[in-house]
Image 1 (tube, rainbow, N blue to C red):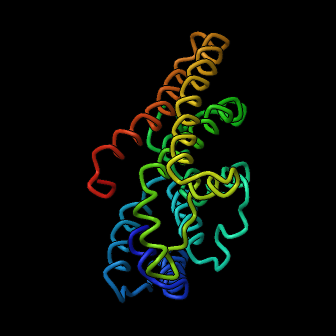
Image 2 (cartoon, rainbow, N blue to C red):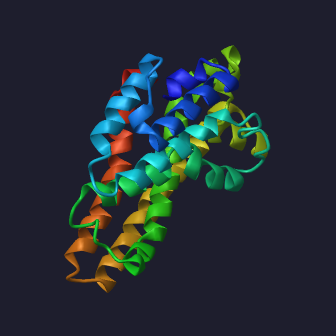
Length: 227
C-alpha cells in the first residue's frame, strides 16, 4: 500500500481508506469498485471468522489513515518527535499485535505480562522504523518529488535538518543508532529473561520481538524495492 499511496494524492488515498472502513463496518453490503477493494475484500473475508481479527483490521486501517493527513510529518523537527510519530505511521502497532494474535501461546498473555514487554517492543519499534528509513530513503525521496501522497517523512531527512548535516552523514548516524539499539535490546532481554526464568511464554515473546527486528533487516537487504 505504501507504493500506491506514494503515487496518489491525499484525496485519492482518503477515498481508499474510506472504502476500507465501509468494508470493515458493513462487509455484507460492500461492493468492490477497484482492484484494491477486491484485494482487501478477499483478505478481510478470510480474517473475519478468526477470533480477535477485528482489532487487527482496525489497527491496519488506522495505519493507512496516516497517509491521508495533509500535514503528515511536516511539523517534525527532532528525531525524538519522529520516533513517537512513526510508531503509528510505519505500522508498528499492527506488527506488535500480529505477534500476539498469530501465536496461540502468546494470545493468552495477561495485561501485566504485555506491559512488562512494552519496553522491549519500543526498542524494537525504533530499530525497525529507523532501519527501514535508511534503506528506503532514495525511494521515498523520489516519490516525494512526484505526488502529493509521497510526502518525505523519513528519519534521515529529519536528523539531517535537526543536526544540520548531509544526508550521507545522517544515514550513518541513523545506522549507528540502529546498531546501538541492538546492543540495548540484547542487554534488556537478558535482564528480562533472568527475572522471568522458567516463563516459557515470555521467552517465546521476547524471541518473537527479536525476530521482528532481524527479519525486517533481512527483508530490506533482499527486496528489490530498495535495490
